[in-house]
Structures are given as structure tokens and as C-alpha cells.
Image 1 (cartoon, rainbow, N blue to C red):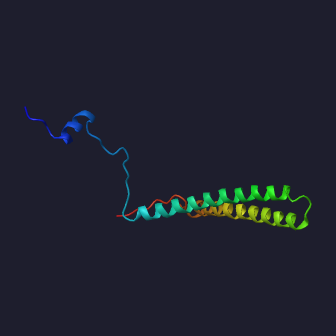
Image 2 (image 1 turned 45 degrees about the vertical axis):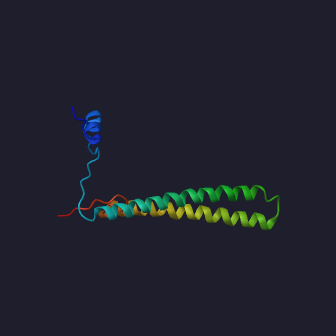
Length: 114
């Protein structure tokens, strides 16, 4: 009796393995989806950073102990953090409104090809 190769032996144990995800895509679609994912990732990271900045600015304000310069710096940091969050949120809202008006999916593009 001849031993079979390890490849066939393992295939007999585990069975055939097929790719569970089936992606239907057209040529060039991957680039646009990648850019969309990058934009969302950058927006999420920026939002998290702005919340972190807001928390640290609040801690600086609490620890200012009445020092006018420290209080002013903390308020400036709080204002800039709030402004950053507003700009990030408005970018996503603007993209959604443009998507609704034009029908072009900006945040989750669908590319049709030949």
C-alpha cells in the first residue's frame, strides 16, 4: 500500500475549501472603494483625535486654577476642537446631501463597467 502525498491526505480530512466571499466587481472599482475606505478611516481618526483634544483641553481648563493665560489657552484649544468636529461632521453631511441630490454615491461608490 502506497501512502498518498500530504496534500491529498489533508484534503481528505478537511474537504474542499472554497472562498466564502464572492465579489462581483468591474475593472477599476477597487481603487474607488479603497479611496472611499481611506476617506472614512481618516474622518474617523480625525474625529477620535478631536474628541481626545477636547477632553485634554477640558482637563487643562480645570487645572488652570484661575491663571488667565492657562484658561485662555484651554478655551482656544476647546474652541479649535469643537470647530474641528464641526468641520469633519459637515464634510460627511455634505457628502450625503450631494449623494442624495446627484445620486452619485460618494461615500460608498458603485462603479458600473463593460
